Image (cartoon, rainbow, N blue to C red):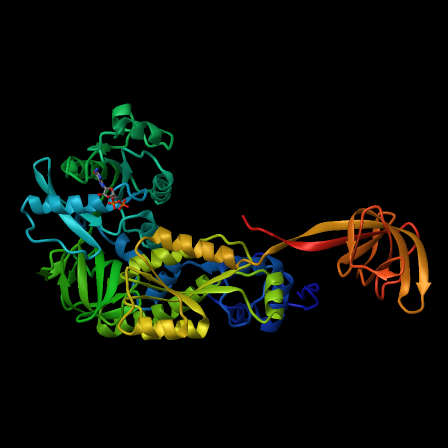
Length: 615
Ligand code: GDP
């Protein structure tokens, strides 16, 4: 079937049901290929739908859906999970089938994996520290724990020693950034609420995120050492959000703790285990190639790319061929949170892995591949897919009108950013949060580069080329880089709190927003007589009815309530004198330049456009 004219072009039309599968980050070229259309005509159709794109540009899901509806196809954008499944399928790795094939007897219990969330300053970091040192105090692990992104503690529970794994990047931002990439790492969330502050906006946000992921919550009512602490109030406040304490007949365990004094931490760990046992079936098969998720990664000066991975099933051994995100390699060594080297890591065990070729992202899945070659090929395919996907993600839309204006003015209003952070988790959390800033359609926020490690000369060069601002999160510029940035006029900003970075970018964006203009009426004059002048054209002998009429201002001519034209006040006279303005109640002669369509009884309204302050 040939399409009716869609903005003047004809495009082969679907029946409204045919499913077209597009990978995330695909371009119009690919769609054109699949539906046998000319890419140029798709550009035109899209243009008439109010969007501009080139044939090779990555499009987001909404745009594909919109085009699909217009063209009569059911366009489905394949999720990263599906894509991953298809990718692995090409290498004969089918993780779903693998799980299904497992028998009851293959499965053994694994420790719960816990993420700590809550409002800023309610004590998440302190609590993670307290839990860690509780372990040391018990003398079981020995040695000081290092920050590798996750750690495991063991605790006595009903006469048994049980392990719990903590993800030690607190906050729901990182949690959700990982979920967005299809990684569900967390089994249980500890929601920290300061007893002296009560339920706050991010408490609810964190709770929503946990509930959206279907993760059971244990509430740690923190700072009970403070005299103004009111733990009962926290319990009461949370009932409004369907989190009802056990002692009030609900199902959620609330534990009063003081992260500062280390009080009641053992009870909190106990509550985590009780909740896990009651609500979850945490078992995995340890006897297969390891599968899991990278939770943190960075580039180490001496050791190269290091990634902390959480094994979710199977067991990883030194020497295994692995692929994590778009990095691959052989496991050269594995270190636990005490810096001790380990030979193998089973389910729920976080370990720092050395031997990868590049730094994976937080939330990237990892797996042990049958051999080095497969690992490399999977990594390459992932790299290609993620490049395409990130292009699509980075593009924030700009409305057509603004684009036109900006193009006309010779510049597009874009805030380009380069993000550098200490660990990939924080870079991703920051990127995610930044892209969520709502600045309307007029400004384009683009993250042109992101990375882990110090700010380098390369970053500054890139910023120079693309007029970008560099944001450093817990990192500083490398040697001589600050000088270079200064010389090139590159703005670098440093943060250690995500919210501050977001706040700053948000205000920068607001400042960059184009001013909105509103019309302000200046005056009106009634035409009493029309004189023809050979020199000036028509002159309206008028009486100023309100405000004042000023020379040079814009005016419109209104006849019987309808606008008949718009023109500048070209000439203004009182008697024989040229004047610049005439006030209410006075007579004057008005000449509208080339505009001569004037009749007795017309009203000339003058106005100007004034900038409206943004709120
Ligand atoms: P986060 O933003 O949630 O990670 O909060 P932090 O762990 O950084 O804690 C914020 C502030 O609260 C710090 O000054 C901590 O010392 C303090 N704090 C944390 N836990 C406690 C506690 O149990 N009692 C008291 N009095 N202060 C605490």
